[in-house]
Image (cartoon, rainbow, N blue to C red; front, top):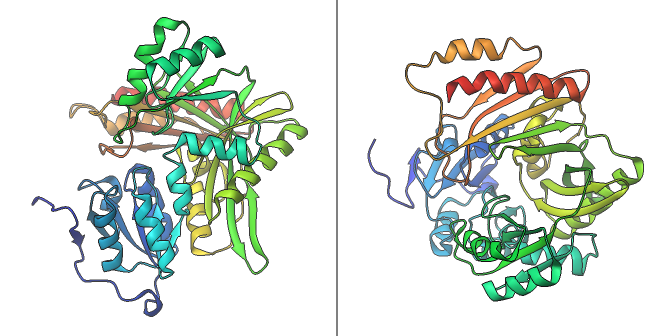
Length: 415
């Protein structure tokens, strides 16, 4: 394959027609990882023409998009030039590393709709701004938190707050560069790990008290707009937990007391309406009894919502595409379900050439009501690379989790 120059549009080189003259809505998707691939397909099934953009060639979504482009998405000039040349109807941010200034300028021009809002995209990279919005402006309950700009400041926070203390970079994807402090000797290594994380230079960290909770949930919240204004719909809560660092288990529904569920919906509604726009928002919450704490929000489909590929009538990707295109949505859950996602290093992928992939899949899919996804690409958009996704449904989440785990265990023969 010939070398690709940044800024070059691949495949069909002809320019798009103006949005108003094009019967097909053109979507420029900023981010082309494995999850973006699913989103491309969701848009295409609704008749959209999709340009998948990323900073490297042959990204997973490039293989299915109508066209693709390679640019430095955190370079405002490059990104603006691409958008002005192609004139899409929608620009959809599906990555955290995007020049927010370029999106703001494009949105203010009024000729292209940017979703999620540029503010959402900026805050997805700014834990300090997001946490201050949630706590200081909206008054949402959160775990006690502090910010530090040096090892000395972080040491002072630790001495004041006590242990255990979670330290995270203010910029980065969830889990990346994160440490748990148990004593003062942990402060400097935690600082170094946090400021070195990700692809964006930063020198501030967030420290957060560890709150004793019963479980964590993702409340997928779909924001749409209609004649009467913006509306919100909520999916059934998704429970999730990390297992041994390289596996994420998720299940739907996560049972919640009525008071806790009402509080969760209230928190989700306030943060999502503050961010604005249309699409799927993954609101991360900590739950203890009837108490609910805001933890984070992602303004695009993410891993814990992958269970919806089997548990709901419309997956998180279909919901996101429909909401962005202004189409009707529903959040109907058709069956309790579970997902188990396995991660690996940069060399992740389907196993050695001697591995009989068909035999492994046959074994995995012997489990009732199961399905799988194998991630053969090296996805450079995420710190952790997905190897495989095991999915299962059942009459209840306990059995669904057991089935998903059996499928995942079978798939591990590939790695």
